[in-house]
Length: 111
Image 1 (spheres, rainbow, N blue to C red):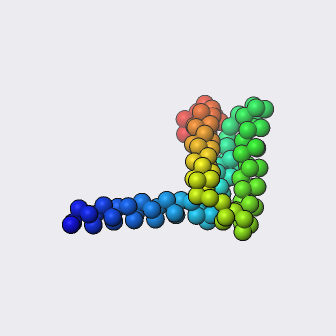
Image 2: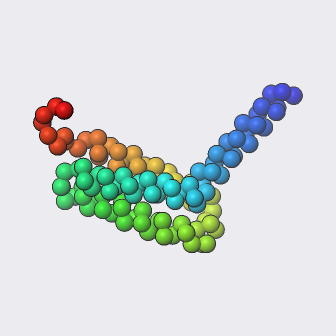
Image 3: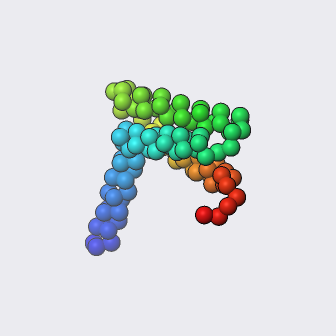
């Protein structure tokens, strides 16, 4: 009986976490975080045309996503598409962090 209750409780917690991740507000916050990372990466990364173009594209996509998330039609997306969108946002965030980590130091002097 106790193990049944524990399984049900874990399932409920997992379902609530999934709903929280797929919530338009949560996706909007994640998009804002990715947009802020793109702005920081634009300043930190070297001025290579290809890299800067990708960073600019990510920034523009996040602006469009923020505008789209505020519409009522966004709430009507099925949960599978929202989950895919969240995975894409997390992947973009990881790529931006990796690009910022590989950027050369601005000076050679230790501070």
